Length: 161
Image (cartoon, rainbow, N blue to C red; front, side, top):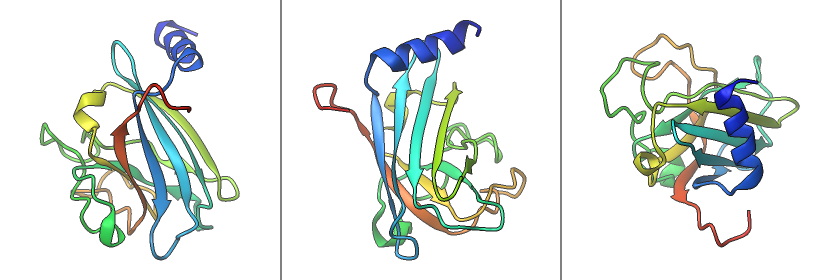
């Protein structure tokens, strides 16, 4: 492993996340649940998540994005567009994240990004979509209906992880 890799694994092993989003499914897929953790590093953010009860689809691949608004009410209709403070085309939005790969309804993921800082995403939402992102279609990758959502909140370092 090289510099950033060692730093990420060492940091996650010794600390608690800086922010979290507790994921809940919507009306159609109410069993979906999980957590996405955000670890602030010197040069970026490590995102780690576990999602359960994802639906069976043709691909078992789901798009995941950070959306502008931290409002998961009304079946996620108020989350707004992708978080995109620099007005980049899709898939270069700060909130565009790698896809989730489901294995019998469960997914684990971890990735490193320099597209945002923790302080920039507090109060925004993590949204999981029912289809994979095509990484081409504007403005949001033709990823289909929002099926799960969680509001990104600052993590209280004194609470149990």
